[in-house]
Length: 113
Length: 110
Image 1 (tube, rainbow over the protein chains, first blue to last red):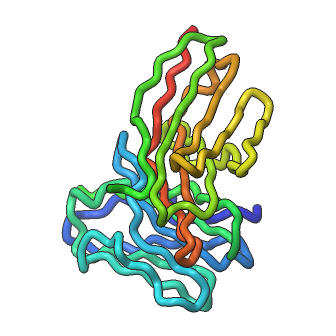
Image 2 (cartoon, rainbow over the protein chains, first blue to last red; image 1 turned 60 degrees about the horizontal axis):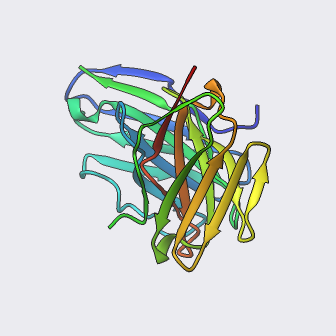
């Protein structure tokens, strides 16, 4: 399909390991967002990419978190030295530049054991 | 203060009831507005955009009040399938960034 694609859909990792989460946005969408959502909680903003502008990293909770967006398309969210509190669903969304809605991927459920 | 704020609920209503949610927004989240719906353990999905003049989509009506800086969602004739969390979203002028509210939970009971 032509929606936002995230992989993996589920990831179980040991505490202290690094993980990479991938987001493939809708083709042509210039804006890309990462959020995370803990069980029963609201969306927590992490990072926002818009075209060639510097990303808004204001939501990243610590320096263990980083994200890249290569070629204005695919994005990778990296969490280093994972902790149990990093367990959550990580959601990616993309939108066209302008006054249009954001579309979400199905998320990556990360469990740190 | 968060850019978009909502009452978390839950709102527990019987089938057939009319229910309304409000959310307030700040100046930084005031370019355009949306309501999203999120089912348990699923990703948020767009329910409807909110237009300045107000808009309706079947049983759902969205209103915008710029003077008081709030938007509302009215659901008429509630169905069991309307049970979900409803997220209010404001889009900012700064690079069109989206600001999500924390959601209002609706439980429609038989």
